[in-house]
Image 1 (cartoon, rainbow, N blue to C red):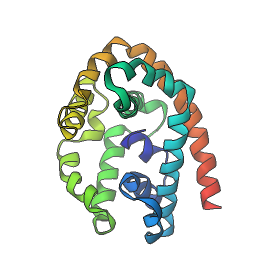
Image 2 (cartoon, rainbow, N blue to C red):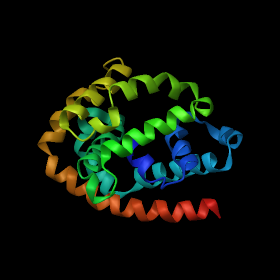
Image 3 (cartoon, helix red, strand yellow):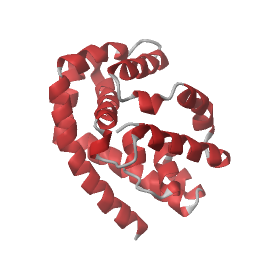
Length: 196
């Protein structure tokens, strides 16, 4: 899953939210250097990724893309699924998406000192271009895929996946909706287990 899903699945604990958000940049046992709630978020993120990668519904989605994008198809599906979460946000949260995202950006700014360099380098662009709120539109997802493709020096051709999104839109949305119900339950269970 991508940024919005990881943040959402963290619940209301700010430390868990930060940990879940920064987890991709924390290798191996480096998570042990962080306060308890942030450690919990990092571990939750890892469990979510493992569950997502193995889920049969997610594999249905990645299969549609694999021939064109190879091992990048999983990354693309993560981004597309964030689109459907943002688009259908009111189904999952009573807080409007623009307010939820603004609160998240504020949380990052208030905890700047604890964030890894990779995140502090990315943050100004993320906030200025409002990446997470823009996931709700196809145009926003197209911009995200363009940015990801640039990071692969155009090797991945991920920017073209917006056409696949449009072509299989209803299928991707149904797959996301079905999978996300499972993921919400899994994440709540994992959070309880990690917190003991």
